[in-house]
Image 1: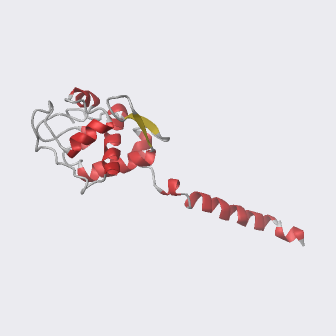
Image 2: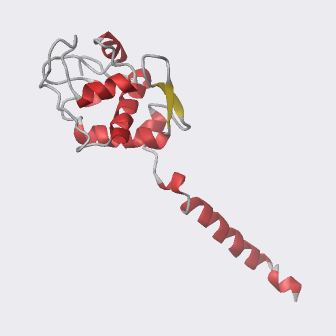
Image 3: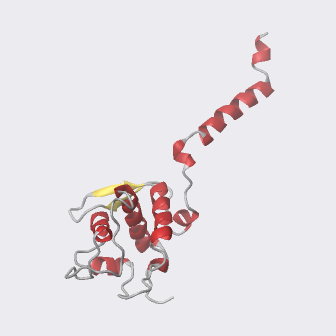
Length: 165
C-alpha cells in the first residue's frame, strides 16, 4: 500500500505542483523585469543608489527600475529620448549634466525635488519646459523609481544622454 503513494508518476506530479506554486505564486517573480534593465543597465539584483547629498543610499530592485523605465516611457519619453532633451533648453539627462545642475540632480532626493517643482539649470527661476509632477499624478515611490531609472541609465547605459542622435 505504501508503494502506491510513492510511485514515480505521483512524485513527479507533486514536484510539478510544488515548483509551479513557487514560481508562479511568488509576487517577486510576478513582476517582470524589463529586458533593457538586464541588458543595458546590467541590473539583476537590488542596487544601492545615492539617495541624498548627505551620502545616504537606498536600494532599488530590478523591478523598481523596470517600473521606473515604464513610467519614464509613458511620461517623459516625448522630450527625453534616450536621455537626451529635445526641446529647449538642450540639457540632457547625462550624469555630467545632472551633476552640473544647481543643486546637483545626481541623487534621488534632488532629482525627485526637480520633478516635483522644475527650475532652470541654476535654480534661479521656475521653468516651464519640464512638467511639474504632483503627488496627485504620480506617487512618491513612482517618482523615485523614475529617478532611479534615470540615474542608473546615466551611469550605465551606452549612449544615454548624448547630445546628438
